Length: 258
Image (cartoon, rainbow, N blue to C red; front, side, top):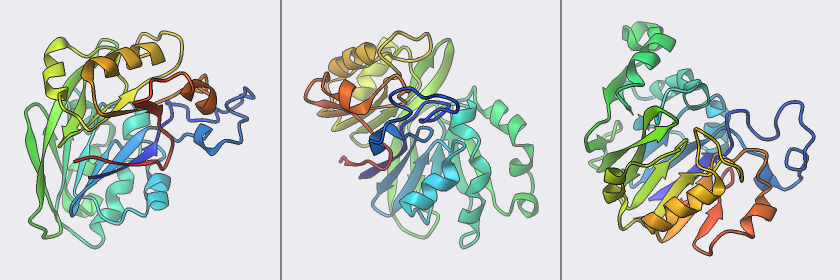
């Protein structure tokens, strides 16, 4: 699998409007972060994780011409508001796009975007929205025989349950403050873990860097990459403090996993 980090920033992006801190003024391109999202290429399959407000720019920048499925982690603005920009993916293929989300996010997605779930003529395509509670298979919209299993990982974002996802030996967990003990069993033997690490200080709805390092150590992936960093994280400075199997991600970073 080829994994592209489309964005690695927090909800306001980096640089943040109106801020002149060290990170927001940094000339290091790793400190310029669009809202967090990810693309997974598994054989002929093209899977997007989250469609935030930067989705259009991210897909253009990564030159992603096809989408077979969308996995939403949760329904907050910075993870869903680019949903309407899925429309061009119907222009050359009218097959439905399989969309998966935590059961608690489905009614909110239907309320925010009522027009996209209606008749094909209104939206120009069909988004097939399903609850991701048990492992499921993603197949191709474009005629390829490829398919791959996805396993939801239910975690807490503050008090709100939401999903991370495991695909093969890769797992993606953003916006997490607690991983229930039972879910750790789904995270064994990973090649790659991509994990929320908001900032050095504690936060009620996200792992701090220390909490992320502790969770990553417990999971024991061969490689861990941290995402969803605030402007309190200067890439070069904080990177020097991480264990050797862990690093901060950056927009456009390309990773691999089996």
